[in-house]
Length: 146
Ligand code: FES
Image: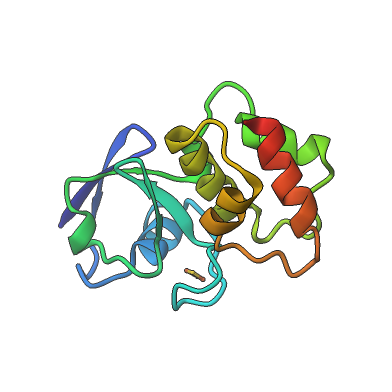
């Protein structure tokens, strides 16, 4: 039984402790905002915050997350959209939206660590590749959010 805090609530998973956090969130906690893209750590679609750091949930197991604090896209901002989400809308930086949750989580972690990142720092911090081709707008949106 793995016990985590997810979006400020205690959650116990009766799942194989080797289960990737991604599938525990999606199948065990019905938090489907976290997306499966590649399953091997390349795309960033599965990014969540674990103890405040952006991590690819396809690469960490439930056992590795025991006792840790996880925030998913559903729990990032309770009352209103997070500033990164607002900026994505303002910059029209969303196309299909599949990569968006992971992108928002990476950007939120970046801005927590660095409130005024340069364009190069933004590009270096975002593993998420938007295959719809709005990458320049994503960078502008994160600059706007900062
Ligand atoms: Fe985890 Fe692509 S699904 S990085």
